[in-house]
Image 1: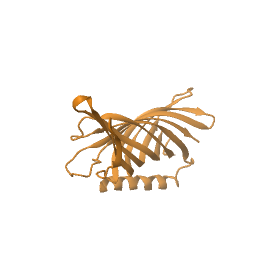
Image 2 (image 1 turned 180 degrees about the vertical axis):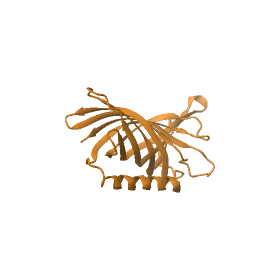
Image 3 (image 1 turned 120 degrees about the vertical axis):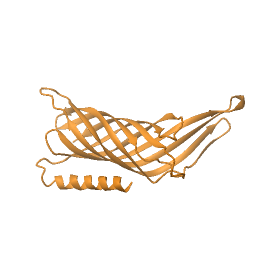
Image 4 (image 1 turned 60 degrees about the vertical axis):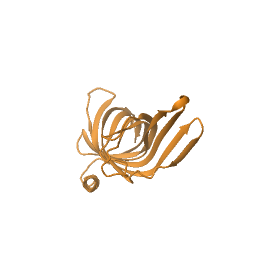
Length: 209
């Protein structure tokens, strides 16, 4: 975990120092979209995916005509659900709900196409997420309850990769992207030997000014 934090800090310093040698001003924008989250890892078991959302802002700094460093700050929800059946047809659904402040730092490559009005892009990089909330919701025929899930770690680390396409609109860019967030550390703090990680597919729309 300390190594991951060191890498993130080094990348932030690299971005800030790049501004002094970058002839072009950085671009800024907003993005948001849907999350389709589930759990992975050796001890995850079987869960059903949960639909959530993400939104936030980003900046990017160009190191060449095709390569950018793009830090982001996102509010994002994650989690998954599992349903158990009991006698006489009774069913109980348990849903783990998480919200995070997530900070990805991405390397982005744009693929130029001459005489084209769209711009394909690929990107990858690490993320660090700070937990804002973690809850367990239990739904059954008799009652619905929600309580704090205290076993969740305060931070989560992982890796992002994905791609998309940008459409220039005057001096702005509207983007559509699909990314996969792969958790690298277990979010469950109840046992050091447990391996339960966040896996999230994100479909997002962005607007860069």
